[in-house]
Length: 258
Image (cartoon, rainbow, N blue to C red; front, side):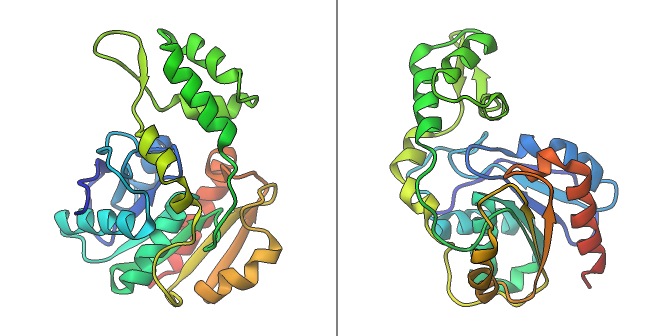
């Protein structure tokens, strides 16, 4: 049964741009980009299951998350959309493109390849669990708890976007951390569906990221044969590190899609 996803919808005419965040992200992380894109097109940004303000449910498989997204499009009477996904969200939109290509006007994949990856979030999960048990009352306290496991301040600031004020006071995580950890293997797996998506595709990768290396490109092109590849001078969070260059790449691509 699909989950009713929380979302931001700017309204407007034409084929919408649907934005799907990565692991431990949310639609809120994309607000500065949405503000720009809404000047020229309708934008829909989603909170995936167990993220943001969407429900917490068991299962993080890509077919289930793709069905969640398609159910949202159905509720909004969107027959076809431009789909943009970062990291885990990139695998979600690739899954939709493989399972229901007729729903996809174009595909934009940000710094992820359609393949399985190894585990690399152990320290982040440890930091979030430590924060959870520490019951911080301020964001300073939350950062100090996270810092015992997560060295990079930029990563801690990103993780802190998942904090909200609890009704009984203090801060709490709004993500479904239990559900995410329980099905982490599914998140690291390849996207759902089979075969290739042959529609217009843009892949934007970071030059300092290891998520889309040159060695991965043959496998990527088997799934996304028409992909245009753009490399930005950035790491994995390229849309945050190089927002203007990321916007320019996406806009140039969308302007060329018929």
